[in-house]
Figure (cartoon, rainbow, N blue to C red):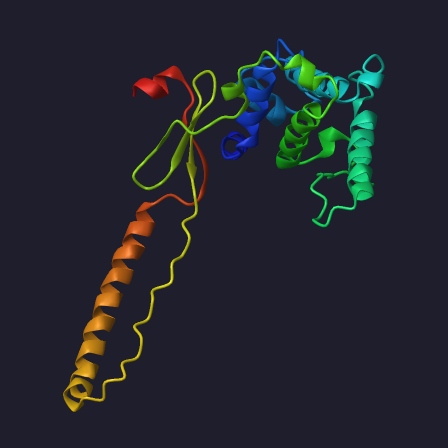
Length: 246
């Protein structure tokens, strides 16, 4: 269940793509999406030291880039303190700017949950995604990413199917499908006629009955079509090379 939950989160491949894209310019870690998913599921406290150290190092790496003044002091034993400090400072900056819209800085920490490892799976993913965004706000970014191709900075879908679902390809073998919720369109009601012709009045009921029958058939057809469509969301289509060839 945990892996399928992660497969439905677009932030997971986005985090991996960010780290891969900027590994040579910002010094981010390079890893496969599967490695990130395994580390998130197994957590920090596990007998498998690789999974634990992987997530530790990823958090430290991103925090050191976000807080260069503390880069030499942030390590795998104290990063929780700096993580909360960074989030608090970002919220304070937002409040000082007096924006009219609500604060968009995500902060899941409270008295009962003071460590990253105490967060839910989705909360951990949101925190990591937010750190990648914070990293791009650092002062050294503009100079360091000058040589990065512009078209690689913004991912675009690689295709669209007949139902309007978008397909996204990330490096490696991952292909995802994004099913977008369709907007409900209201049917326009015919304008009332000013014609008082008696013959038209007699036929009005017959016309209304025929129109109602047509509407019912269209509604039933639409319901059948909607049943065949996937619910709006993010789906993993291809995970391995075998998936691409099958």
